[in-house]
Image (cartoon, rainbow, N blue to C red; front, side):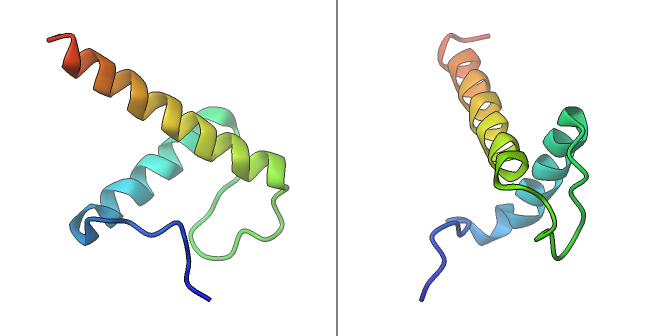
Length: 66
């Protein structure tokens, strides 16, 4: 079974991992490198949701020319 959450641009993987850790830290989610099976689906989902929200905000700023 293949993973659906793969990075489309392999060179961006490290940056996405740093971004994920930054968002988790902002939210107070104790995300760590490696296994995070001890976290709830709510905690994991909140990190992913906030990542998407921040990416959309940045894209909107770029599109508006700011």
